[in-house]
Image 1: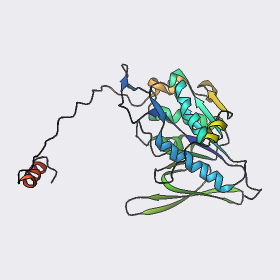
Image 2: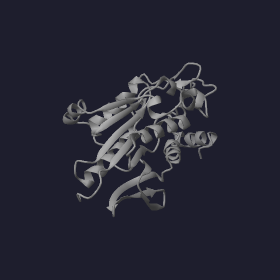
Image 3: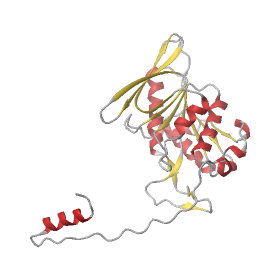
Image 4: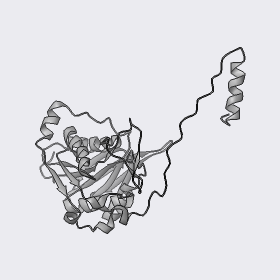
Length: 272
């Protein structure tokens, strides 16, 4: 890396989400998600890997990847996992008033954290969270921070040109590939096609114990309780019902006419 290049600071947004291996449940009158059995969102691991690969490609030791999350006390486990994987430090926004935040409140809270950090060159997120799956936060975050956004990137590269960082991203659809360029700072969301996330090894797990995690409250980032949580939410879940049990499937025993009966069944279900 050219020594004239400025240090790059990347914030990766990570979320503590219910483990997809277990059934999901809702709590209380507000029908909020039960997060008692939660892990780092799988889609956020791709964002973290993308950030780590960017700084590794640049070389040097001045670049920094900061894992940022918001949520109750146990949400810090998402940051700890990110540190084990390779993030350099972590930030946890934790405040009782955050409970019940929807995508808009989450975006306001995370934007406030990014502003509080002050020197963030690039914000990287996953394509969605594996609980809400709205994909709204990256765009809302970019709007609140007044930054350019690149969504659903499948490839990222950084260049340093005349004192400014330049981001090049590739976006792919079924039959089109786009190349998008942006100056930094910017907000980027990445897909699960961008890389293969690394696993934390023993060395990384031990090193994470010495890395700093900063805990912030709403007052620290300049937010009022009315801007987040149930009070600041634009949406709410009015009613929820348990998913009905699956009915037993139809078993077709072959007596020489199984093919015809299978076709008839599929036609009845309007699957043909």
